[in-house]
Each structure stands twice: as structure tokens, then as C-alpha cells.
Length: 423
Image (cartoon, rainbow, N blue to C red; front, side, top):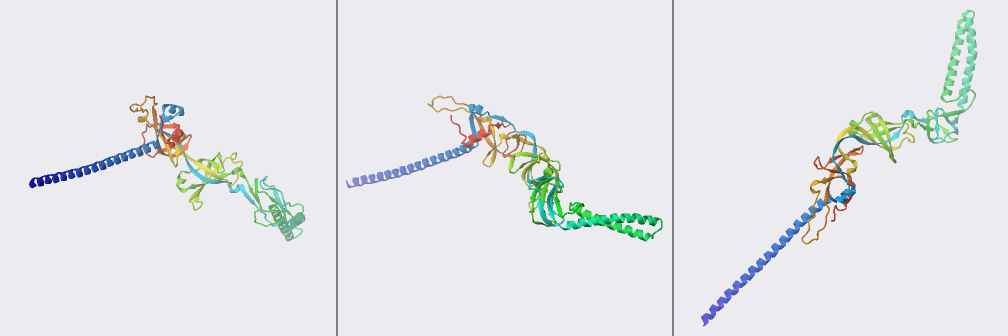
């Protein structure tokens, strides 16, 4: 009996150990299943996120329109064309006049300012009296001239008389030579006095201490640097007179662009503070030395006198120098749109031109319009001329790609809004 009881106890112990092992194996298997399930879910989420990010990236550069939207917006497509566009070089500068058309008026003799007859901005003709100054030395110059001319009159008569006597051998020839020398001296003295008075624009007739300050050229009075009653010194600018009829431009062109610049090229420029008016000019001269430390060379361009009206020296301008025509790939300028700091064109994607709407099981049948898809392609714009813009594609595209030439701004707005289309 005791042996039978021990045998039953051993059997129960063995069975209990087996049950425990089986339970442990079950727990381990369950844990592995949970871990595997979590890994599978994780992987699925990762793949889903990757697909979503790719989908978002794709949607950020793509726009889809329904056929009705396509017609409403009047989307038009075209192709890249090779066109002769006028290449331009941009340059800044200012208006100026030739040296012969600008004058600094001064006096050859000092004196007190008596009267001033003009105001700044007054147009004056050459020879117009701008002011007068007073100097008593002028009276002495006039007296010297008068004295010399009086002596000339007397010596001329004496010269004629002595010549007759000398020819008849009545008087010694020496007396005739002395009279002749005196006459020449007085003539030289009178001429010198006259030259001084003429240089001062003072008449040889009468006696006056007033010296007129006259305009040396036609033009507008600029700065007036004197005041009534002040002393005007020699060599100091009293007035500035500028003739604007020969206005031209001085443009600063960089060294890298010099090879494309030549005399005769046409330019279009606008005033920096009046950019709504374009004026034409033509290059007539190019400096052969650098102007300053910025390594620019001065290029001179004439302005038509009719267009120069209203311009004054020193006005800043922005100019386009028109270079020879070059053949480049181009699109209508409205085809190129800007987003942030990049430029794009929209290409119609033929593969996605029509897309069917898939219905889920049990979904109510509805009518859905076909869609037209467009993709934004980055470009680098170049010269714009005659309504066309030169384009260089960042990534190569097919030569027969349909590019939106009308409605690109609408597509850009749709793309900024997410590029989504709701059914």
C-alpha cells in the first residue's frame, strides 16, 4: 500500500512539472506574438508615413483641375520656342552735361558787388549781364586808353608831316624815325588798354567804375555765390550756368560686361525716382580707364534733346544697354511665375490627364469629372524682351512638354493652397 501511494505521488509530481513547462511555453509564445504584432504595426505605420510624406511632397508641386475649372480659367498651353531676344546689361549712372555746356562764372578783377540781375533757375542768353561789381581801377584803364588814343591822333599828324619833309630831304630822317616810334608806342598802349577793358566787358567810351559779370554761354543759372555789397574776389565762382540741351548719361559698367559694350548701342533708361517713364539714348564714348575702386568704367550715352527737357545734371538713372540679338529658349513672360525666391512654369502631365474616381463598396454612385494634372517645374529666367522671357530648366524636360502659357498665376495660387481638389 505504501509503495502504491509513493508511485501515485511521483506520477502527480511529473504531471505537475509538465503542466508548468507547457504554461511557460505558452506565455513565451504569447509574448513573441505580441512583439511581432507590435513590430508589424510599427512597420505598417512607417510605410504609411513614408507614403504620406511622398504624397505630400508630390502634392506640393502638383495641381489638379476639373475639366470645368480648366475651361473657366481658360488654361492655354504651348511649347518652348527658340527666339531672338535682345540681351541687356543693366547699369546705373547719372545725368550730366559736356564740359563746354557748363560754366563757372568769375571775375578778372576784384570789386564790390553793386547789383545782381538774375535769380537761380533763370534762363539767360550768352552775354547777358548777371551782376555788376565796382572797382576804381577800371576808370584808370579808360583814362589810359583815352590818353593813348589822343596821343595817337596828334602823332599821326606829326608822322604825316615828318614823312613829307623827309621825302623832300628838308629835315633829317632821324626826326621822322623818332615820331614813327612814338606813334607805334602809343598805338600799343591804346590797344593794351582796350584789350583789358574788353576782357572786363567794359566799354572804351565814357568813364565808369562798374564791371559787368556776363553769362559766357546760353543756359540756366544755377548756384549764385555772391550777395549785394559783398566783395567779389578774382578766381572765385560767382555764378553757375548750365546748358541742358546737350544732356548725356555717365553709366558705370563693370569689367565683366565691357566686352559686350560698343559705341552706337541703344540704351533705355528710367530716372530712379520716376520709373514710369522710359527714355532712349545711344552710346557715343567709352572710357579707357577705371573710374574708382569699384572697378567700373564710365560709358557715355547721348540723349535726344527733345527727351532731355526737364532733366537736370546729377539725376540718378537705371539703364538697360541693349546688346545684339541672341537665339535662346523662351516662353511668354506670363508663363513664368515666382514663388518665394524661385521661379516656376507649369507642365501638363499627359499620363494624369484623365483619372477615374474609384467607389468604395456600398458607396452611392455619383458623377465625377475628369481631372487635368499640372506639375510645377523650376526654371531660371533670363532676358525678357518683346513679351518673351528666356528660360533655363533646372531639370531636363521633354522637348514636346506642354507648358501653361496662360493661367499660370491661377495654378500657383492653387498650389500654395495645397494643390488639393475636392470631389
